[in-house]
Length: 369
Image (cartoon, rainbow, N blue to C red):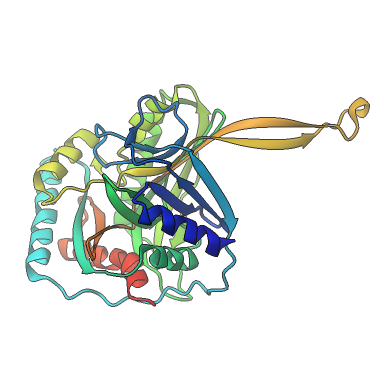
């Protein structure tokens, strides 16, 4: 039962042992992985099995929680997923001024031709003394279409979030990824109308991902653009699928960081972020998820001489998500991370307002209960 699983995780936390508890998009299953000791494990070549947690810094170490103890239960919840507007934190004049200037600097670099797009973010600090497990329960009740998680390691800290964006999904040699760009607030009974800025940003992200995948996959297919709702926000999304040609490590290295969370071209955008954002993103805009999980599939043969005979197929699956709409919990504080893509059509004041709208995903959870 879910309540028993939560008690098990609570005991794990009281012992200061690593764990992750999570739910996948549109699934009633809650997964938990508990580590037997407090050792800090790192990925070496992505042939390992477990739950990975990676920083924004593509050269930083990727953390692995091994499959020491696994749990899976069904979460039955009758909560209606209404996305009420959260109470925005009191506006900090200095933070607003800094972010507006940051966006203006980004636009200057774009005008000079140094970069085509850069994703700029900020960090909010909120008082939060509530149990992280209570916050997680609200998260999975409200954001059913997102990947929701609570992750902890005593040497790293505690992170929690509800992200709508897949970095990649593989099943044997089949690859699926997506580009996600453009943001509008959700308004009940209204469908979003997208402008030139959003479509341009979406095209840039999709084109970039398609290009970096050309040497990594074959039979690359790019879907039409669609509008998708993620909590109290709308986004534009394009799916890309293909067959893996290279190993998983090379594909992840090619994709991360995507232009949806860094910029185009990636090296120049990343350099600008490191030099001008006034904080360390750490694991915000990194990625997380299941690495090389085994899935057993039972099939029944249709051959006449083997009637009713079934056989088992074992598939290897990896499912990684970009760590968006997240927060870090530290000593009675919640650090909430938000950002937005800057292109030549960006207006600084609008970009500031977009970070406020995006912050409501997590702030709405903190303001409830």
